[in-house]
Figure 1 (cartoon, one colour):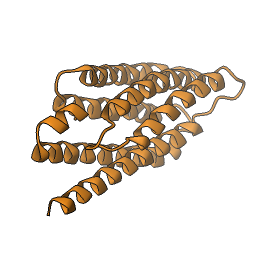
Figure 2: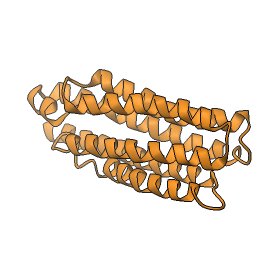
Figure 3: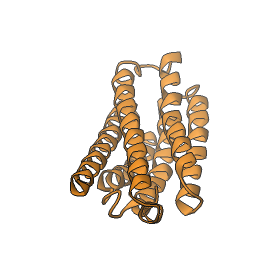
Length: 197
């Protein structure tokens, strides 16, 4: 899915890569929005349902990274994607453990994950920019916001009244950006098909 691969392997492969990435982004975005809606009504206390949902969210990212990793050729983008997948798996475990504690602990763990995974997402988005996959601005914005919001979560976790309300907003925003990126990839594919006719 890197620009170099897409531009050197020909149009059929490029279209297939774009289509796979579009489906991945769309699925990831929809799952994030569904998660946000469910979590919004289930996080008043750190019970089994809330903790399960907290574990599931980074696992969505981990599975998405694994799917992405398997489609990528060897290179730095693949290594960053692998790193993000491992990071998200560790985050799921850490959030599950933190769920036995307090809102502040959960928010702090989630914040650290958001900072590091957001930075990784920006790196991948920058590497995917090009004529085949576009400017990747929704992915870049989502990654940048994840980085900044993660810092905010850690500040909030150290405050007097930490709340998990913000996590639904975080997931919704990230989901919407992934859906927009999928739509842009689909639009680009349609443009290129019309040019080739």
